Image (tube, rainbow, N blue to C red; front, side, top):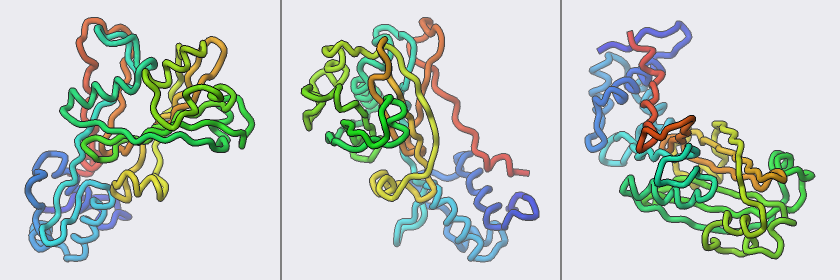
Amino acid sequence: MTIPRGTAQSPKYQRLAADLRRRIAEGEFTADAALPVESELERQYGVARNTVRLAVDVLVNEGRLVRLQGKGTYLREHPVLDHRAYGPALAPEPRDCLGTPSAVYLGEAADAGRELSTDFEMMIVRARVDIAERLGLRPGEAIVVRRQLRLLDREPYAIEESHYRAGLAAGTPLMEPDPVDGGDEAVLAALGRTEIGAVDHLVARMPGPEEAQWFQGGPGVPLMVQTRVTYDRRGPVRVIETRYSADRSRLVYGIGDLGARTTLPAPAAPVDPARADAP
């Protein structure tokens, strides 16, 4: 077995890591069996022990592999959950997920045979510059944040934070330190601020220290950050920022008339860039 040829600037351990990614993507290794030990990989590729160790370190940092002391190196598999971030009407489901996002998460977890649990907290904080801009406030103004830490089978899945103007939330159940029956959407509707549209901004970034500690991902695993600004006919209502670990979540957007389908089409499996390195 040989290491794929790369550019002159590509170190040998990186090319070895690329070939191991290819083998993982092609299903050569399974989650219930350890990968070949370092001495076997040395023999397969004809490289030094340190080259093997550095290549495996790369995949550990990416969250693809995990070393278990005394047992070996295994695939680190997180079941990926498709979250319907938005979709047209799919009877008998609601028009879209603006009205009942919590119910959407519960339904998706149940369909996947997984248990969803949520830790909740309410905070009053100073608005970040980007949040203030989207809500039409001055940076540093007080806002109400309602945070939900969602776990699937007790594994961290998503951090969702809904940001409200203090004037909108004051004197309402949005100030309560517990979830609201019917969701925050019911409170907004009672206030005459029913959300009728939204704009999503999607970015990927590396987690900060606290986020990395909570998600428990590999040090090289990024977050997907979905920032949704919702609107009624009077203007912006709230900003919902949801952070997902990229190795265990996939956002699904349905576009157009999907009445002929009973479910949203599953996205194609992502192409592993390592396969482009193969000879």
